[in-house]
Image (tube, each protein chain N blue to C red):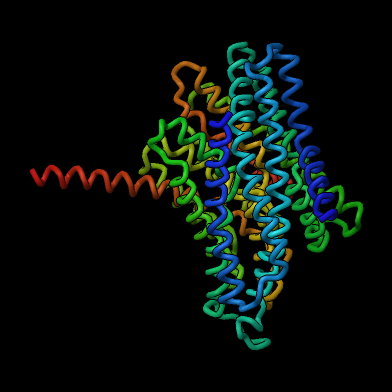
Length: 261
Length: 244
């Protein structure tokens, strides 16, 4: 218990230290350029303390409860013995079904708890006047990450070049950009950048490293990277796709109503 | 006060709801697929309580502190009308938050040892460290530069997709010339630059700016800063890999 409290203190100290440069910049610009206190200064400071405390607790909890399990799991699932693959047998991508499933499940569930994504989603709901639901957006983004990480695991298994996949993702995003409704586009682009931080990166990175070190012919240094990139492109595809789908469904409903009359 | 407590209980509830999928996934794979018992169950439980509490506090703090502060600063900067001050602020925010980012420090160190093994640089501790710190500076500068570009876009009201599509094309072209060992790191570096505290501040900055400036729509113009900050580092890191 004492150890746990000490560890929590450590994490709080690290978080505060990480935030110091941001706080210094904010303070500098406040003092030199703006020279006027923002309204509700006290409330803002309390909010800042909540954020620091919240993030620290969040990290401690993850390190205590989820990361060790998630990481061992990633290693065990990629272990040839578990997958029933004979030593030295050629690599068949079909042998790794559990890995793809785990990649998708863990990608989805960690993204849903990602604090940066929560922040963006809250803002989007607020600005859109509630027509865009925060939770809905997060589920769609998480589905995109699930798909992305799963494909990324497939890429490591097959050892196919990373750029091809990412370029294909880009091509898809570009085509969708011209079809999707305008207001969703910037938000969709942003959602690619916020999916991979505190929660997702450690577990997903462990999965990539586990795969790359267990599969013959893959180097953990060269092939272990790239999963994060998948988790940043496919959410964009998912959000744009979701928008296209809802627009299409709405249009169809209106048409149906016309026909009924 | 009662209302505040009730609000927090609701936050706790939604934080718990956000964690249910992780719990289910981990439990399913542990018990049904790997068929192993849960190690250290009480530790896991304490950890989960911390995560739920932490997430709820974070969201509460976002709405009380980070969002209002970001928006108040964007508002004040825009009203001052100092373009240089605003762009400098954007650059500092991007640079300052990225250079100390733990995920980036870890990735840069890893990249140093890869470059050493691949023979791109001398394989000594010293040259690996200088490669790593060079990479870190490159990423931090690129995030700063992308926020400057992003804020400038908001001021001008240019549509975002030209920039992003242009960026994708640039990434594609540079990928063809970049050394193989840097590509994976470059692609990943885009995702790790935007930390949990930066995102709310940067979002509030964009939204705040587009709310003050006449003719800008927060939905169309306010978002997109994060997208710039995750695309630009990819380009910069590959160029760094080519030059180093």
